[in-house]
Image: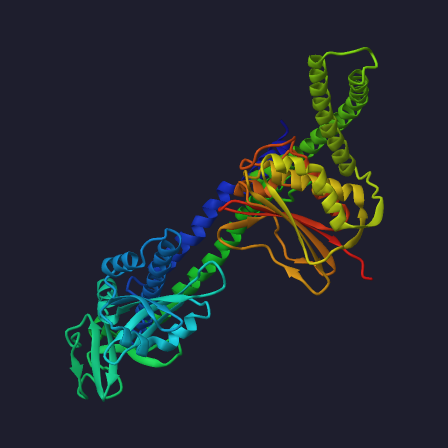
Length: 603
């Protein structure tokens, strides 16, 4: 080999090798670890400390964050206990007394009570009398009757309680009673927990008659249940320990009134003042070096992670049926090569899908003619055109005709689907009453619902709603959605067909409940639209099926397959062609709702 060619080959190989992921990772390690260590080791091996004031402030801030977290956690814990007890009372029909006895006993609560709007006590368990509860917490109980679950700190004459007041719903908007539970601050374990974590002093106290009543503490200076008059540790306004840096946090009730205080203190002996101020300069240099190294390392990391994320997005798009998605990654490394291969795979998949679509479309079209002829022949035979037939032969021919009709219906759907896919769609729009069309569609398939004793209801505030659309296509969509609801409904269940007319400004957002899920991924403007929905109390839709629900040949794992998986895809194509929207909603509790919208013209 010629020396120049050999040298050029070596140079190209070297340039290619330095653009690999392995090299980038090694560079990342170099900048993130090696350089900061070298900078710090060259300048100093001493520990860089902040000043005592700054350190104490940071430590107090840290302890305050821990305190706030645990303080809020106490309220969340009580809220969970209250809601769980209400579920037992309402859903399990458990005895109110038994449930609240267990609640008070197992969680060391001071009181549990069920109170009506008339201030009658259905149940009262614990240390506080009905009179004390009514007089101390009457205002917050009244707030809870508005439907809000409240977690707060509230006070009595000699104590402070962490309480939760939760409304009791009876299945309607009416709130006949509320549940109130409370735990006194002398039973809250926050002081002991923070003592274990950070060794900080925590004390809860209440000021009454110029003295501080210590409710709870983890420090011997502030003994629980003790009273401090104005002295070295109490200045008449708040607690103070000269041996500690301290922070006082006001404790407020639901109405933002101060009812007590929390004292946080850390010992001054834990902090020292740095002796040599020049060490600060060395620390600044080390921090700047580390910051620069992190910036350079982050830039290198992006060259690795961005291509990976682009490939992940592309793979998800391919999985959802977008075979035209392409990845653009520049360079000569493995990621660029992988992107090129990925794009070629996408192109090949698209070609194969096109070939398959053409094959299926041609096959279904060629099958339709002989099947129509076969159907016509069977019809003639049933009418006796070719001679008398026996009852047994008649039953066999009717079965053949029924099967043939189902196959023809599936072939027709396939042809309609491929007609929409090819873009060869022409809508024959006319003005019609969508409610009349709904009634007509229900009458045609009502016998299927009667077999399962399913009640179909039509709900609308209007006797008629006129839209301009392809009547035949919209009827097929209605027929498909209602048939699916019947097929997946339960015996003696119900199907609600709702039709709403939205004239005013209406914004619809996807459901975000923890138990609910939907195929809708964006907010819709439904102004001047008619909304048609089919709601059932059947087996529902599987959460994992939602992303592919309106794709071709998609069969839900949660529902019984009733065809080839084309009905919802066809419905989606029809509604999109009408400039409408269609989506599905379901939940872990069962039942599903399919909704579609069509624009209406202003009259």
